[in-house]
Structures are given as C-alpha cells and as structure tokens.
Length: 257
Length: 233
Ligand code: FES
Image 1 (cartoon, each protein chain N blue to C red):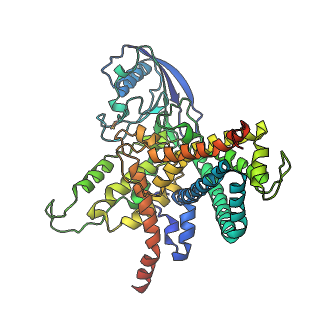
Image 2 (image 1 turned 60 degrees about the horizontal axis):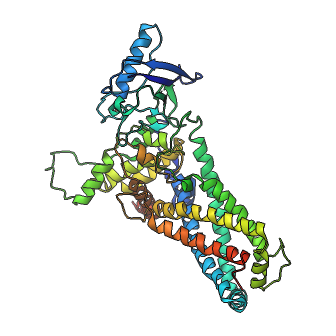
Image 3 (image 1 turned 120 degrees about the vertical axis):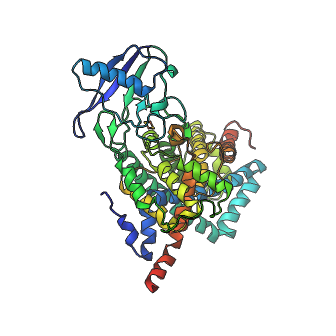
C-alpha cells in the first residue's frame, strides 16, 4: 500500500512548525500506524533527514504513550483504538493522511508529534492517590466491594492517560481524564478517605493547567482508546458539589483539633 | 508548577463561593441551574400563550391575572429570571474565553465524531436567543418596538397585530428553532453537569431533552404561524 502523509514537523518547543509531505510506500495492511511511521522514518534517515519524532512505548494499547491526530480524529478512525493498535488496512490504498500532534495549551509541543503531557501528571499528583495502612498485607478480598462498584471502578481505571480526550475536545477539556481518576478511586471503599479533597484538588489543578471546560460534545468518549463513559464526568461533578458543600464542616473540625 | 498544590484550597469556608465560581465546573453548574430555571419558565410561558386559541377574553383575562392578581409573584419571577439570564451569560462568556484559550493552535484537519448541530451552535445560538429576548420584551412586554400600535393590557390585539407582519413572524419562528436546539443540548447537558443523571450505556441518547425541545419549539411556533395564516379568530 501507498500513502501520502502530511506530517506536522516542528524542531522544538519554540520553533515554527509546518506540514511536510512524505510518501509512504511498501506498506502492508497488517502494519500498525506506528510501524508505517517507522518505515517513513527509516527512509528519512537514509536520505540524511531528521526522522519524525513521536511518542510510543508498549505498542499494544496499554501504556498511553502514543497518540496522534490522524485525519482530524484523535487516534484515527477506529473506535476505542490507540494509534499503536490502528492498522493500515483500515485505510484505502493511496489515501492522503494528515498527522498532527495533540493540540492544547496544556500540552505544548516538544518536537514534531511529541507533546508534553506532564499536566496530567500534576492533576494526578493533586489527588490521584489513596492512603493505605502499612504492615502486613491484608487478604485481597477482605474489603467487600459491590460488583457494580467494582465494574465502574475498573472501567474508569482503564484510562491510560494518553490525552486523546483533551485532543479531541473542542474546548481542550481534561474532564474525561479527571473524571476517570475521580471515579476509579472514588467508588471504591479504599478511596473514601480522600474522596472530597481529591475531587476539589484535581479540578483546581485541571483548571490551573489551562484545560477548558466540558460542554458535553461527547468527542472525548469517541476518541478514548478505552471508550471511557461520559458518566465519569457527571460523577466527578456530583462529587464536586458534595465536597464543596461539606467544606465548612471539614474546616471546623480542623479548627477544633 | 510541578508539585504545586492548588492554592485555592487553603481558603476558609467563607471563600467557598469564590472557589466554586472560579472553577470551570462551578461555572458550568451555574449555567446548568440558571438554564433549567429558564427552561421551567419557558414551559409555563408556552402553556400561557396557547390560551390565545381560546379567544381574546381568555388570553386577556390571563394577562390581567398575571399583572394584577399575582403581580408580586410576577415581579419575583422576573427578578429570578433576570438574575438567571445575567449569570448564565456571564458564565458563558468566561467559559468561552477559557475554552478558546485552551486550544491556541487549531488543527489543520478536524473531523467531529459526536458533536451535534445543537452542541456546536450553543454559543452563537445563545447569542441569537439573547438578542431575540431583548427584541421580544421590547415588542410584546413594553411595547417599545411597535410594528403595529401597542395596546397595553390587550395581549390579544398585540399578538394578532404583530404576527400579521411577515418579518415579525419570521423572527419569532427562527428564534424558536434556535430555542429548540439550545434546549435539546442544554437541558440534557445541564442534568449531566449537575451529576444527577443515572449512568447509561449510551449517554448521548437524550429522549427527554428531545421531547422537551420539540414541545417548546412547536408550542411556541404555533402561535405566530397560526396568527399569520389567519387560523386564530
Ligand atoms: S504505545 Fe502504548 S498505548 Fe500505544
């Protein structure tokens, strides 16, 4: 197969970027999108040019490192699929493909298709943790969890933090990501101790990083390689209201102690 | 910024309101609540309007009831609505700014996958509705804009006169399309923003919001259209 690629090239964070056109030839339909990019890069190297920089790691859809805007769709045209799991057989031979980095103020471009997603790390650091007792490990199943809660937590925990939700959102909002973290920890008994401060802190951090607000276009869910449900955003907002409501009480307790 | 704690969380209880208003989620919640208040109002307004089909006596008696019998309540509703409209618009403008700033570099190619006409027209549609509300109040509440001479208290005459003029009817009909779209997306997303919805397998399906939007669109549009075509006597 053969493809015409329009790839965003940008030498560094401050450099002026532009699209370069490359022809990808000798591509097998069983290659992943990243493998196709590898082929392009090898020919670039052979011609003494800089290869296209892009993030990748596991190449099996579980780490969240990869991510490109492919023909205007985050992670390309297949639903619930990360870029590394997108195969070239889903394109037509001879297709023109635009490849762009995630675009968001909170995700500045480092080089070509690589963006800095440490804003996500800071959102997690703000509240994506639980306290746990040290000492001998408890039996795994001695804390009872309702099946539905376990399912909800598991579905939300599938988030790999790739940033496609932000990239796809017309508002550059990180609500699906933050909602996934809030849900994943907040529905489990182990996450209750920090439940209130978690949602307040994660939302404050999300805003501070310069992500936009949610207007319920639903683009994030469509882009998500794990198809995380929009319900996590509702849950986050409900938790937020409850946490805000309870803030006064927490303050008074602190004052008395 | 790495490791920085959100400074806003150190504040005391009195600043809870400020913390709420500063966050994007808080502003969205304000928009949801004020939006739902307005949806409730327009539903009542629409039901009131439909009395025009029962004749001049009925609709004018209803107007008299509102303006004299329950005048204090009417003013209370007006104040609540005014506050809602102002908060809704201020939050919308601030959020739009934040959202635009969040994507400083646009994509060269962009293929929306789930966004609807309604969701994408919220901002311009909302602006159109705001302008329409000003026009509508000047036309049928205060009588400042007089396509035909305005008769205070005679709702029937004002409606019958105004909607015989093609451009007045056209403005109302177009505005009601904007209203239907705005509510189709807004009513549904308000419920989700408030987090009071139940988890669903297909969250984008919204039969109730669609029904409310269609009822409002049809219920409002039928009056100017019927008057224009002379179906109201
Ligand atoms: S490279 Fe790990 S998810 Fe794609």
